[in-house]
Amino acid sequence: MKHLTKMLDLTKPDIVKILDLADSMKAEHKLGKASKPLEGKTLAMIFQKASTRTRVSFETGMYQLGGQALFLSASDLQMGRGEPMEDTARVLGRYVDGIMIRTFAQQDVEDLAKWSGIPVINGLTDYDHPCQILADLMTIREHKGQLEGLKLTYIGDGNNICNSLIIGCLTMGMRISVATPKGHEPHQDALDFARKFSDTFELVQDPAQAAINADVLVTDVWASMGQEAEAVARMKTFKDYQINDALLSKANPGAIVLHCLPAHRGEEITAEIFEKHANVIFDEAENRLHAQKAVMALLMK
Ligand code: CP
Ligand code: NVA
Image 1 (cartoon, helix red, strand yellow):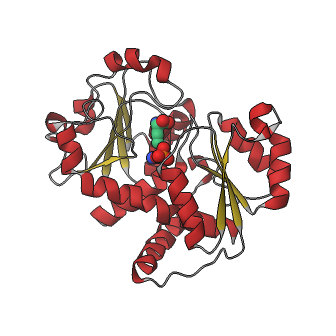
Image 2: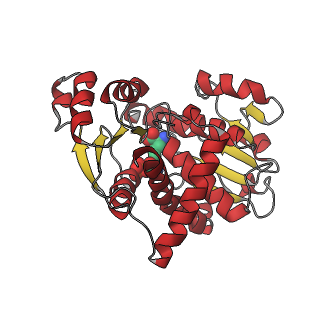
């Protein structure tokens, strides 16, 4: 593993290694005994979209590992004035030890990885959000004790979160049912990957059908960053794709609910369900920190 450009980069042993290290880093951090494997190292963080969790968890994570992080807003970089990615990549590669990027096009991440000569981490693209799904898997393992054999249901848009969940869950031996409205299905790459898992993958349009016997329910916003102009139309399309009491009644008793955040109460999740499951949802947000520290330590040490 040289980079984390997308969920498809990761094998099952890679994910197990990251999650085991993340668990031990979390435990050591709580005991105040954490080591600093990235002393003297710098992570450049390029942001072309807004962020709360990704920015703060990478920056804090790098500090906890003994290194430092640079917040680089794409609009302040020469990149924002048209400097090509391959030049930005080669320059950053001479200064820093790793790059995290949040952007629109997956190709930007691939170009950075190709040209920089240093590890590159995808901090969200329109296509993928691997760091989020590593934290999700860590959280499921923490609360359910295992991944293998569990059923996860994803309700809503076939977006970055959905693509990454399909690949992550199937890689880890979980079952996954996805319910999306017609025309909002996951990316073809995720569907192609899922074709090898006909017994453990299901794509339907009916949320209630997808939720039957779920151990974990996941949803995400109806309009992602960059889709603001479609937000009103999407409200109509997605109105039945909500995690609410009726949907949870289809799931297994003790089912947990995850949300990558930010959440829109009254849209993809009701306020009641959100608050009832807030404990797990904020564990999930916390686990971004430790999962990403594990990724950075493995890639940048
Ligand atoms: N879940 C997530 O990536 O949050 P931010 O957009 O706040 O980084
Ligand atoms: N699908 C959302 C995830 C935000 C963390 C987006 O891309 O905006």
